[in-house]
Image (tube, rainbow, N blue to C red; front, side, top):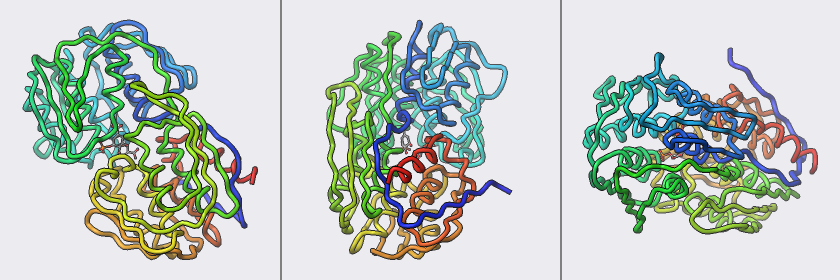
Length: 432
Ligand SMILES: O=C(O)C1=C[C@@H](OP(=O)(O)O)[C@@H](O)[C@H](O)C1
Ligand SMILES: C=C(OP(=O)(O)O)C(=O)O
Protein backbone atom coordinates (compact mmCIF):
# COMPACT_ATOMS: atom_id res chain seq x y z
CA UNK A 1 0.00 0.00 0.00
CA UNK A 2 1.26 3.51 -0.81
CA UNK A 3 2.55 5.66 2.00
CA UNK A 4 0.26 8.11 3.85
CA UNK A 5 0.83 11.34 5.76
CA UNK A 6 -1.48 12.67 8.43
CA UNK A 7 -1.69 16.41 9.10
CA UNK A 8 -3.70 18.19 11.77
CA UNK A 9 -3.34 21.78 12.92
CA UNK A 10 -5.16 23.64 15.66
CA UNK A 11 -5.67 27.31 14.79
CA UNK A 12 -2.45 27.50 12.75
CA UNK A 13 -0.85 30.75 11.58
CA UNK A 14 1.75 30.87 8.84
CA UNK A 15 4.52 33.40 9.13
CA UNK A 16 7.98 33.97 7.73
CA UNK A 17 10.03 34.23 4.60
CA UNK A 18 11.06 31.32 2.36
CA UNK A 19 12.82 30.74 -0.92
CA UNK A 20 11.03 28.05 -2.89
CA UNK A 21 13.02 25.60 -5.07
CA UNK A 22 14.03 26.48 -8.62
CA UNK A 23 11.51 26.88 -11.42
CA UNK A 24 10.72 23.50 -12.99
CA UNK A 25 10.18 24.78 -16.54
CA UNK A 26 13.42 26.80 -16.51
CA UNK A 27 15.41 23.97 -14.90
CA UNK A 28 14.39 21.51 -17.64
CA UNK A 29 15.27 24.00 -20.35
CA UNK A 30 18.65 24.88 -18.81
CA UNK A 31 19.74 21.24 -19.19
CA UNK A 32 18.25 20.93 -22.67
CA UNK A 33 19.91 24.06 -24.07
CA UNK A 34 23.16 23.28 -22.26
CA UNK A 35 23.18 19.83 -23.86
CA UNK A 36 22.43 21.15 -27.37
CA UNK A 37 25.24 23.75 -27.14
CA UNK A 38 28.81 22.60 -27.48
CA UNK A 39 31.01 23.38 -24.45
CA UNK A 40 30.36 24.17 -20.81
CA UNK A 41 27.08 25.52 -19.45
CA UNK A 42 26.59 26.14 -15.75
CA UNK A 43 23.27 26.27 -13.92
CA UNK A 44 22.60 27.79 -10.49
CA UNK A 45 19.39 27.23 -8.53
CA UNK A 46 18.44 24.03 -10.42
CA UNK A 47 15.33 22.23 -9.16
CA UNK A 48 16.30 18.88 -7.59
CA UNK A 49 12.80 17.54 -8.30
CA UNK A 50 12.17 14.11 -9.81
CA UNK A 51 10.99 15.54 -13.16
CA UNK A 52 14.13 17.60 -13.76
CA UNK A 53 16.39 14.75 -12.62
CA UNK A 54 14.83 12.63 -15.39
CA UNK A 55 15.87 15.26 -17.94
CA UNK A 56 19.47 15.12 -16.66
CA UNK A 57 19.55 11.29 -16.83
CA UNK A 58 18.30 11.32 -20.42
CA UNK A 59 21.09 13.61 -21.60
CA UNK A 60 23.70 11.54 -19.78
CA UNK A 61 22.47 8.57 -21.84
CA UNK A 62 23.05 10.68 -24.97
CA UNK A 63 26.71 11.16 -24.07
CA UNK A 64 26.51 14.58 -22.40
CA UNK A 65 28.59 14.93 -19.24
CA UNK A 66 26.49 16.43 -16.43
CA UNK A 67 27.78 16.95 -12.88
CA UNK A 68 25.35 18.08 -10.20
CA UNK A 69 26.17 19.27 -6.73
CA UNK A 70 22.85 20.08 -5.13
CA UNK A 71 21.35 22.94 -7.07
CA UNK A 72 24.53 23.68 -9.07
CA UNK A 73 24.89 21.84 -12.35
CA UNK A 74 27.76 21.79 -14.84
CA UNK A 75 27.05 20.51 -18.33
CA UNK A 76 29.93 19.66 -20.70
CA UNK A 77 28.45 18.78 -24.05
CA UNK A 78 29.97 17.66 -27.34
CA UNK A 79 27.01 19.51 -28.97
CA UNK A 80 23.86 18.05 -30.52
CA UNK A 81 25.75 16.92 -33.66
CA UNK A 82 27.89 14.59 -31.57
CA UNK A 83 25.45 12.89 -29.22
CA UNK A 84 25.65 9.11 -29.03
CA UNK A 85 22.79 6.70 -29.68
CA UNK A 86 21.63 5.42 -26.27
CA UNK A 87 21.74 1.70 -25.53
CA UNK A 88 18.59 1.83 -23.38
CA UNK A 89 15.23 3.51 -23.52
CA UNK A 90 15.04 7.15 -22.40
CA UNK A 91 12.74 7.29 -19.38
CA UNK A 92 10.85 10.58 -18.82
CA UNK A 93 9.17 9.36 -15.60
CA UNK A 94 6.15 11.51 -14.69
CA UNK A 95 7.31 14.55 -16.67
CA UNK A 96 5.20 15.81 -19.58
CA UNK A 97 7.67 18.64 -20.17
CA UNK A 98 10.58 16.21 -20.53
CA UNK A 99 8.66 13.95 -22.92
CA UNK A 100 7.21 16.63 -25.20
CA UNK A 101 10.27 18.87 -25.42
CA UNK A 102 12.56 15.85 -25.95
CA UNK A 103 10.45 14.76 -28.95
CA UNK A 104 11.21 18.08 -30.64
CA UNK A 105 14.90 17.92 -29.70
CA UNK A 106 15.45 14.27 -30.66
CA UNK A 107 13.65 14.73 -34.00
CA UNK A 108 16.40 17.08 -35.18
CA UNK A 109 19.36 15.19 -33.68
CA UNK A 110 21.55 12.46 -35.20
CA UNK A 111 20.44 9.71 -32.83
CA UNK A 112 17.70 7.10 -32.69
CA UNK A 113 15.99 6.44 -29.39
CA UNK A 114 12.87 5.21 -27.64
CA UNK A 115 11.18 7.56 -25.19
CA UNK A 116 9.13 6.05 -22.33
CA UNK A 117 7.34 7.28 -19.20
CA UNK A 118 5.51 6.13 -16.06
CA UNK A 119 1.90 4.96 -16.00
CA UNK A 120 0.47 8.49 -15.83
CA UNK A 121 2.70 9.92 -18.56
CA UNK A 122 1.99 6.93 -20.82
CA UNK A 123 -1.68 7.99 -20.83
CA UNK A 124 -1.03 11.64 -21.72
CA UNK A 125 -1.61 12.79 -25.31
CA UNK A 126 1.48 13.15 -27.51
CA UNK A 127 -0.15 13.67 -30.93
CA UNK A 128 -0.32 17.41 -30.20
CA UNK A 129 3.47 17.24 -30.62
CA UNK A 130 3.95 14.34 -33.03
CA UNK A 131 1.55 15.77 -35.64
CA UNK A 132 3.38 19.11 -36.11
CA UNK A 133 6.79 17.47 -35.82
CA UNK A 134 5.91 14.86 -38.44
CA UNK A 135 4.80 17.60 -40.79
CA UNK A 136 8.34 19.02 -40.43
CA UNK A 137 9.66 15.60 -41.51
CA UNK A 138 10.24 14.02 -38.08
CA UNK A 139 10.31 10.24 -37.93
CA UNK A 140 8.32 9.35 -34.82
CA UNK A 141 6.28 6.18 -34.36
CA UNK A 142 4.33 4.71 -31.48
CA UNK A 143 1.17 3.03 -30.30
CA UNK A 144 -2.35 4.19 -31.18
CA UNK A 145 -1.37 6.30 -34.14
CA UNK A 146 1.63 7.83 -32.32
CA UNK A 147 -0.56 9.19 -29.50
CA UNK A 148 1.16 7.52 -26.55
CA UNK A 149 4.59 6.69 -25.17
CA UNK A 150 6.67 4.68 -25.81
CA UNK A 151 7.59 6.58 -28.97
CA UNK A 152 10.52 5.74 -31.22
CA UNK A 153 12.29 8.78 -32.66
CA UNK A 154 14.79 8.55 -35.51
CA UNK A 155 16.58 11.88 -35.69
CA UNK A 156 17.12 13.40 -39.14
CA UNK A 157 16.55 16.31 -41.48
CA UNK A 158 13.65 18.65 -40.85
CA UNK A 159 12.06 21.52 -42.77
CA UNK A 160 10.66 24.71 -41.31
CA UNK A 161 6.90 25.30 -41.35
CA UNK A 162 4.12 27.58 -40.20
CA UNK A 163 1.88 26.08 -37.54
CA UNK A 164 -0.99 27.28 -35.39
CA UNK A 165 -1.12 25.38 -32.09
CA UNK A 166 -4.85 24.80 -31.39
CA UNK A 167 -4.56 25.10 -27.57
CA UNK A 168 -2.06 27.42 -25.83
CA UNK A 169 0.74 25.08 -24.72
CA UNK A 170 4.34 25.94 -23.99
CA UNK A 171 5.26 22.28 -24.33
CA UNK A 172 3.93 22.08 -27.89
CA UNK A 173 5.34 25.49 -28.85
CA UNK A 174 8.75 24.61 -27.39
CA UNK A 175 8.92 21.19 -29.10
CA UNK A 176 8.29 22.92 -32.46
CA UNK A 177 10.87 25.65 -31.71
CA UNK A 178 13.52 23.02 -30.84
CA UNK A 179 12.78 21.24 -34.13
CA UNK A 180 12.76 24.63 -35.92
CA UNK A 181 16.25 25.36 -34.61
CA UNK A 182 17.53 22.32 -36.54
CA UNK A 183 15.28 22.68 -39.60
CA UNK A 184 16.02 24.30 -42.93
CA UNK A 185 14.27 27.64 -43.37
CA UNK A 186 11.91 29.47 -41.05
CA UNK A 187 9.55 27.99 -38.50
CA UNK A 188 6.61 30.12 -37.42
CA UNK A 189 4.46 29.05 -34.44
CA UNK A 190 1.36 30.86 -33.26
CA UNK A 191 -1.03 30.04 -30.44
CA UNK A 192 -4.47 31.27 -29.32
CA UNK A 193 -3.06 32.87 -26.13
CA UNK A 194 0.50 33.40 -24.96
CA UNK A 195 1.89 30.42 -23.04
CA UNK A 196 5.03 30.57 -20.89
CA UNK A 197 7.93 31.90 -22.95
CA UNK A 198 10.96 30.44 -21.13
CA UNK A 199 12.22 28.65 -24.24
CA UNK A 200 12.24 31.86 -26.28
CA UNK A 201 14.03 33.80 -23.54
CA UNK A 202 16.62 31.11 -23.00
CA UNK A 203 17.28 30.71 -26.74
CA UNK A 204 18.19 34.40 -26.80
CA UNK A 205 20.44 33.96 -23.79
CA UNK A 206 22.25 31.18 -25.69
CA UNK A 207 22.75 33.47 -28.69
CA UNK A 208 19.89 32.35 -30.93
CA UNK A 209 17.68 35.06 -32.35
CA UNK A 210 13.95 34.58 -32.08
CA UNK A 211 11.28 37.01 -33.17
CA UNK A 212 8.14 37.39 -31.09
CA UNK A 213 5.15 39.30 -32.40
CA UNK A 214 2.05 39.01 -30.23
CA UNK A 215 1.17 35.32 -30.06
CA UNK A 216 3.51 34.39 -32.92
CA UNK A 217 7.12 33.25 -32.61
CA UNK A 218 9.53 32.87 -35.55
CA UNK A 219 12.86 31.06 -35.56
CA UNK A 220 15.33 30.78 -38.44
CA UNK A 221 16.73 27.24 -38.66
CA UNK A 222 20.41 26.35 -38.61
CA UNK A 223 21.45 28.67 -35.78
CA UNK A 224 23.99 27.40 -33.26
CA UNK A 225 23.61 27.73 -29.49
CA UNK A 226 26.50 29.21 -27.51
CA UNK A 227 27.07 27.59 -24.10
CA UNK A 228 26.03 29.95 -21.31
CA UNK A 229 25.34 30.24 -17.59
CA UNK A 230 21.82 30.15 -16.25
CA UNK A 231 20.43 31.38 -12.95
CA UNK A 232 17.10 29.74 -12.14
CA UNK A 233 14.62 31.78 -10.07
CA UNK A 234 12.23 30.16 -7.58
CA UNK A 235 9.14 28.50 -9.03
CA UNK A 236 6.01 30.65 -8.74
CA UNK A 237 3.93 27.49 -9.24
CA UNK A 238 5.46 26.10 -6.01
CA UNK A 239 5.17 29.46 -4.24
CA UNK A 240 1.45 29.52 -5.11
CA UNK A 241 0.66 26.93 -2.43
CA UNK A 242 2.02 29.10 0.38
CA UNK A 243 0.69 32.34 -1.14
CA UNK A 244 -2.79 30.81 -1.16
CA UNK A 245 -2.31 29.47 2.38
CA UNK A 246 -1.30 32.92 3.67
CA UNK A 247 -4.33 34.49 1.98
CA UNK A 248 -6.84 32.16 3.68
CA UNK A 249 -5.37 31.15 7.06
CA UNK A 250 -6.17 33.57 9.92
CA UNK A 251 -3.32 35.87 11.11
CA UNK A 252 -0.89 34.73 8.43
CA UNK A 253 1.74 36.62 6.48
CA UNK A 254 4.19 34.85 4.14
CA UNK A 255 7.00 36.28 2.04
CA UNK A 256 8.56 34.40 -0.88
CA UNK A 257 11.94 35.72 -2.02
CA UNK A 258 13.81 35.32 -5.34
CA UNK A 259 10.75 33.91 -7.06
CA UNK A 260 10.26 34.10 -10.83
CA UNK A 261 7.99 36.94 -11.99
CA UNK A 262 7.91 36.21 -15.72
CA UNK A 263 4.60 37.80 -16.84
CA UNK A 264 3.60 34.61 -18.67
CA UNK A 265 3.53 32.90 -15.25
CA UNK A 266 2.07 35.47 -12.86
CA UNK A 267 -1.68 34.84 -13.29
CA UNK A 268 -1.78 33.69 -9.65
CA UNK A 269 -0.79 37.19 -8.49
CA UNK A 270 -3.60 38.72 -10.52
CA UNK A 271 -6.11 36.20 -9.14
CA UNK A 272 -5.05 36.80 -5.54
CA UNK A 273 -5.41 40.56 -6.10
CA UNK A 274 -8.83 40.22 -7.73
CA UNK A 275 -10.04 37.97 -4.89
CA UNK A 276 -9.06 40.68 -2.41
CA UNK A 277 -5.87 39.23 -0.89
CA UNK A 278 -3.40 41.65 0.69
CA UNK A 279 -0.48 41.17 -1.72
CA UNK A 280 2.73 43.07 -2.31
CA UNK A 281 5.10 42.39 -5.22
CA UNK A 282 8.59 43.79 -5.51
CA UNK A 283 10.44 43.11 -8.78
CA UNK A 284 14.25 43.06 -8.65
CA UNK A 285 15.19 42.74 -12.32
CA UNK A 286 13.38 43.02 -15.60
CA UNK A 287 14.00 42.81 -19.30
CA UNK A 288 14.44 39.96 -21.71
CA UNK A 289 15.99 37.52 -19.22
CA UNK A 290 13.92 35.98 -16.46
CA UNK A 291 12.76 38.56 -13.93
CA UNK A 292 12.34 37.70 -10.28
CA UNK A 293 11.51 39.35 -6.97
CA UNK A 294 9.61 39.09 -3.70
CA UNK A 295 5.93 38.39 -3.14
CA UNK A 296 4.29 38.97 0.24
CA UNK A 297 0.73 37.91 1.07
CA UNK A 298 -1.33 38.31 4.24
CA UNK A 299 -4.75 37.05 5.22
CA UNK A 300 -7.69 39.11 4.01
CA UNK A 301 -11.37 38.61 3.29
CA UNK A 302 -11.59 36.92 -0.10
CA UNK A 303 -14.40 36.95 -2.64
CA UNK A 304 -15.20 34.75 -5.61
CA UNK A 305 -14.27 35.78 -9.17
CA UNK A 306 -14.40 34.45 -12.73
CA UNK A 307 -11.12 33.07 -14.12
CA UNK A 308 -11.20 32.46 -17.88
CA UNK A 309 -9.66 33.29 -21.25
CA UNK A 310 -6.10 34.48 -21.77
CA UNK A 311 -5.12 34.33 -18.09
CA UNK A 312 -5.58 30.53 -18.00
CA UNK A 313 -2.18 29.55 -19.52
CA UNK A 314 -0.47 31.91 -17.04
CA UNK A 315 -1.81 29.97 -14.05
CA UNK A 316 -2.64 26.54 -15.48
CA UNK A 317 -0.75 24.55 -12.80
CA UNK A 318 -2.12 26.76 -10.01
CA UNK A 319 -5.79 25.92 -10.64
CA UNK A 320 -5.98 23.09 -8.04
CA UNK A 321 -4.80 25.41 -5.25
CA UNK A 322 -6.96 28.25 -6.59
CA UNK A 323 -9.99 25.92 -6.36
CA UNK A 324 -9.18 25.27 -2.69
CA UNK A 325 -8.77 29.02 -2.11
CA UNK A 326 -12.19 29.61 -3.69
CA UNK A 327 -13.83 27.34 -1.08
CA UNK A 328 -12.81 29.98 1.51
CA UNK A 329 -13.94 33.01 -0.52
CA UNK A 330 -17.34 34.66 -0.29
CA UNK A 331 -19.53 34.04 -3.31
CA UNK A 332 -18.99 32.05 -6.47
CA UNK A 333 -15.75 31.38 -8.33
CA UNK A 334 -16.09 30.21 -11.93
CA UNK A 335 -13.10 28.65 -13.70
CA UNK A 336 -13.57 28.30 -17.49
CA UNK A 337 -11.46 27.57 -20.61
CA UNK A 338 -9.27 25.15 -18.65
CA UNK A 339 -10.06 21.82 -20.33
CA UNK A 340 -6.28 21.24 -20.48
CA UNK A 341 -6.51 20.31 -16.80
CA UNK A 342 -8.08 17.05 -17.90
CA UNK A 343 -4.83 15.88 -19.55
CA UNK A 344 -2.30 16.71 -16.83
CA UNK A 345 -0.71 14.14 -14.46
CA UNK A 346 -4.31 13.16 -13.71
CA UNK A 347 -7.67 14.61 -14.77
CA UNK A 348 -7.32 17.59 -12.43
CA UNK A 349 -10.93 18.76 -12.90
CA UNK A 350 -12.32 15.40 -11.78
CA UNK A 351 -9.68 14.89 -9.07
CA UNK A 352 -9.93 18.37 -7.51
CA UNK A 353 -13.73 18.23 -7.50
CA UNK A 354 -13.85 14.77 -5.91
CA UNK A 355 -11.25 15.56 -3.25
CA UNK A 356 -12.59 18.99 -2.27
CA UNK A 357 -16.13 17.54 -1.99
CA UNK A 358 -14.77 15.01 0.55
CA UNK A 359 -13.69 18.00 2.67
CA UNK A 360 -17.20 19.43 2.51
CA UNK A 361 -16.68 21.99 -0.28
CA UNK A 362 -19.47 23.08 -2.59
CA UNK A 363 -17.85 22.49 -5.99
CA UNK A 364 -18.99 21.14 -9.32
CA UNK A 365 -17.04 20.09 -12.37
CA UNK A 366 -17.81 21.49 -15.83
CA UNK A 367 -16.29 20.22 -19.09
CA UNK A 368 -13.65 22.97 -19.03
CA UNK A 369 -13.42 24.04 -15.41
CA UNK A 370 -15.08 24.18 -12.02
CA UNK A 371 -17.70 26.22 -10.18
CA UNK A 372 -17.08 26.75 -6.47
CA UNK A 373 -19.41 28.33 -3.92
CA UNK A 374 -17.92 29.69 -0.72
CA UNK A 375 -17.14 30.11 1.99
CA UNK A 376 -17.62 26.59 3.37
CA UNK A 377 -16.13 25.15 6.55
CA UNK A 378 -13.93 22.16 5.68
CA UNK A 379 -13.63 18.97 7.71
CA UNK A 380 -10.85 16.40 8.08
CA UNK A 381 -10.87 13.46 5.67
CA UNK A 382 -8.62 11.13 3.72
CA UNK A 383 -7.47 12.70 0.44
CA UNK A 384 -6.08 10.95 -2.62
CA UNK A 385 -3.16 12.61 -4.40
CA UNK A 386 -3.66 10.39 -7.49
CA UNK A 387 0.16 10.37 -7.64
CA UNK A 388 -0.11 14.03 -8.79
CA UNK A 389 2.21 16.46 -6.96
CA UNK A 390 -0.16 19.43 -7.31
CA UNK A 391 -3.04 17.42 -5.80
CA UNK A 392 -0.79 16.23 -2.95
CA UNK A 393 0.20 19.82 -2.10
CA UNK A 394 -3.41 21.03 -2.38
CA UNK A 395 -4.40 18.36 0.20
CA UNK A 396 -1.61 19.46 2.56
CA UNK A 397 -2.67 23.12 2.38
CA UNK A 398 -6.31 22.05 2.91
CA UNK A 399 -5.28 20.62 6.30
CA UNK A 400 -4.52 24.20 7.44
CA UNK A 401 -8.14 25.25 7.03
CA UNK A 402 -9.87 21.93 7.76
CA UNK A 403 -11.23 21.08 11.18
CA UNK A 404 -9.77 17.62 11.94
CA UNK A 405 -7.22 15.25 10.50
CA UNK A 406 -6.31 15.28 6.82
CA UNK A 407 -4.71 12.06 5.60
CA UNK A 408 -2.81 12.42 2.33
CA UNK A 409 -2.44 9.26 0.31
CA UNK A 410 0.85 8.91 -1.61
CA UNK A 411 2.45 12.22 -0.55
CA UNK A 412 5.81 11.11 -2.02
CA UNK A 413 4.72 12.37 -5.46
CA UNK A 414 5.27 15.95 -4.19
CA UNK A 415 9.01 15.42 -4.80
CA UNK A 416 8.29 15.78 -8.54
CA UNK A 417 8.37 19.58 -8.16
CA UNK A 418 8.89 20.51 -4.48
CA UNK A 419 11.11 18.05 -2.58
CA UNK A 420 11.28 20.13 0.65
CA UNK A 421 7.60 21.13 0.66
CA UNK A 422 6.81 19.65 4.11
CA UNK A 423 9.90 21.27 5.67
CA UNK A 424 8.72 24.67 4.44
CA UNK A 425 5.18 24.00 5.63
CA UNK A 426 6.43 23.08 9.12
CA UNK A 427 8.79 26.08 9.28
CA UNK A 428 6.06 28.57 8.32
CA UNK A 429 3.58 27.09 10.82
CA UNK A 430 6.18 26.99 13.61
CA UNK A 431 6.96 30.67 13.00
CA UNK A 432 3.28 31.53 13.31
O1 LIG B 1 6.47 24.08 -20.85
C1 LIG B 1 6.43 23.84 -19.63
O2 LIG B 1 7.46 23.84 -18.91
C2 LIG B 1 5.11 23.55 -19.02
C3 LIG B 1 3.96 23.86 -19.70
C4 LIG B 1 2.61 23.60 -19.18
O3 LIG B 1 2.05 22.50 -19.90
P1 LIG B 1 1.31 22.67 -21.32
O4 LIG B 1 2.27 23.16 -22.31
O5 LIG B 1 0.82 21.29 -21.66
O6 LIG B 1 0.18 23.61 -21.07
C5 LIG B 1 2.60 23.29 -17.70
O7 LIG B 1 1.36 22.71 -17.32
C6 LIG B 1 3.73 22.37 -17.31
O8 LIG B 1 3.74 22.17 -15.91
C7 LIG B 1 5.07 22.94 -17.68
C1 LIG C 1 1.57 19.62 -15.65
C2 LIG C 1 2.72 19.63 -14.99
O1 LIG C 1 3.93 19.17 -15.47
P1 LIG C 1 4.29 18.25 -16.73
O2 LIG C 1 3.32 18.53 -17.83
O3 LIG C 1 5.70 18.59 -17.06
O4 LIG C 1 4.19 16.81 -16.26
C3 LIG C 1 2.81 20.27 -13.66
O5 LIG C 1 3.93 20.43 -13.16
O6 LIG C 1 1.78 20.63 -13.04
